[in-house]
Every structure is written in structure tokens, then in C-alpha cells.
Image (cartoon, rainbow, N blue to C red; front, side, top):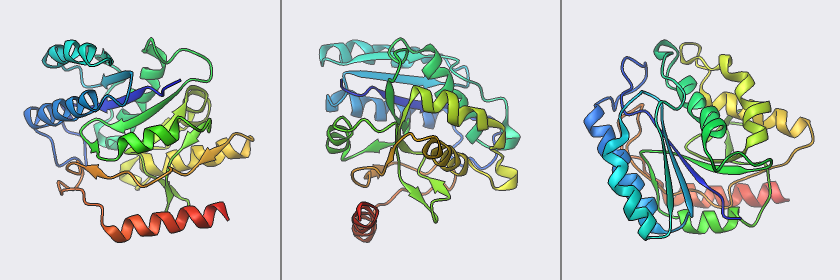
Length: 240
């Protein structure tokens, strides 16, 4: 079964701390461009776009017809999760989107179902190769662990419904940017907890080549050749 794509979105971040890209119009355009990229790539049969700030997603409706013509089903989830914790940073809102998407999406209700979560403003240039390799493994969680395994790359990861509901979402209140405990730290903690219970985790099959603007720093995301080489070395060491 081809894995569904879950794109998370907050078109209006309001007063959320540590967010530089905060123009609703700019963010809408970035989400639209990214969604068009994934629809036109024809990599995914099912795409879920989940937004948590209460924005009207009518601006994406025309894309549903285009997606259908290209063989992709597009599900738009409005008011999916919440953004009511601006003082804690964007991580709590992000996790609430993911939890609600697994609760509400018509494609994420089967036991054992997984989704590939990508931050909705970003495009991943090598998504085809990544998706093909991800579909060949049944690992409950697939993500890049970094910083001596203390953080996870939250921009691009695979998670099962069970992992989100049992291992990750119960740690929701640990996320607090004011204490420098970010979504990435808590995701890594959940992965370790997942492993301690005997479930499996795998490193991403290759480094995602992400194109976009970092929402925290406002800087263009770049993936250098040295990063790609280091990632392949890390994969070999983990296999060893």
C-alpha cells in the first residue's frame, strides 16, 4: 500500500514565538506552491493537507480537481488541531495537527496505518526515491535522529497511528520552547520509548533534499554535499 502524505500547516501563526515567516499571505502562497509540487509529482495516491489556525482553505479547492485528474486524492482538513499555545512555540500546535489528522482523516483510520509527514511549506526534491524506499519497509517510525540521538528531524518523518497515539501525543505537554525543549526533542524521546517497547525504528533511507524557507530563522534551507556524505556514512555506521 502506498503511504499517504500528511502536510501540516499553520497559515496564521499569530503571536507564536520563534516564528519569523508570519505573513499569512506569504505562508498561504508557500503552502499552495508546495501542495502543487506534490500533486504534480504523482508520487502519492492520497494527500492530506491539515491546517490548525482556522483559515478557510477555499484557496486550495481548485487544486482538488487538478489532483483528481492526475490520479491523486486530496483531503483538506480545516481546524485540524489548534494553535492556542503561542507562548510555548509552534511545536505544540504542530503535534496537535498530527494527532487530529490521525483522528479525523478518512485515510488514517486503519490499524497499523502510517503516514509520511512533511512540513507543509517545504518541497522535498528527492521525494520520489524516498517514498519508494519507505514503501518497502514496515518500520513504525522512520526518521533522522541527531545530536547524539537527542533530537529528530521533524520536517520529514514517517509514523504509525499507534506511535502517534500511544508514544508521541501523550508527551504533548513536554514541548516548551521557553525551556528549549522543542518538538524535535520530544519526537526523539517518543522514538526511544517506542524502541523500549519492542517496536521498530529506521533511519530515513536517504537525506531529504528540502527546498524552502526556515520558519524560525527566515533563512533559505540548504543541503550541502558534505551533509549528504555525512548522512550516508551515518547510515553505514548504524547498519554496522
